[in-house]
Length: 297
Image (cartoon, rainbow, N blue to C red; front, side):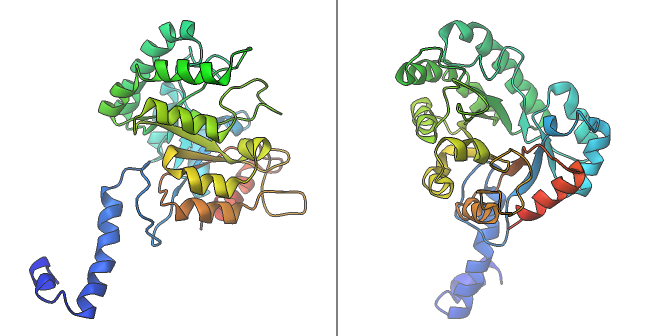
């Protein structure tokens, strides 16, 4: 049925049903990887894995083809020199590492850091755009006695200096939500509400959050509700079991219900990548394949 024929018969039930089947696929094709379109239940998100959890045991040139066999389409948190290794095997890099001047402890919440961070991020944005990498990670930095309000103000000030370049390059800067209770003491972007407020202050579709399920379970719990209520501010997700940051198959030791969490993410309309960031305790590739299967909903 072409468009003219459809318009002629639009009053009929059959035509309406046909149009309803056509429109979702058109929307999906127009949407970017990080957008949140109206949910299309015929498709789901894609699978990625964080390199650092694996490449100490399996070198990246060997890990890339093995991860692909496990159902992974991306290996993330890589430096520019590593991008061609995964691309050689037909894999993407969903999230690039930030420049060397950026770290979890040293982020955008100090003005004295902006002198290095801003030019370095502008250069990395160009590199990501040239390589077709959609996301670039950044961090708030540690509080070191700073108030959360001051941190918001200074982070927004610094990020506004790079988001226009990110908009032109179609690269999304994502700040990771991390726990400050167990793994990253004193880290400032440690609650969803703080991160969401920062996204609002920056005011660009090219600055959003990396919602790490493991970290936010430790800090605030209520994961599914927080994802549903804040999906528009989230551009990427990470996984890991809790307690332990290891595999997350449903057992009597695990408190996160990943199939339910994945369905909640899917139902927000998210169609980007889910990044596996757990530390495997058994054969790494067996655990990775199991995680991809659990997260396929």
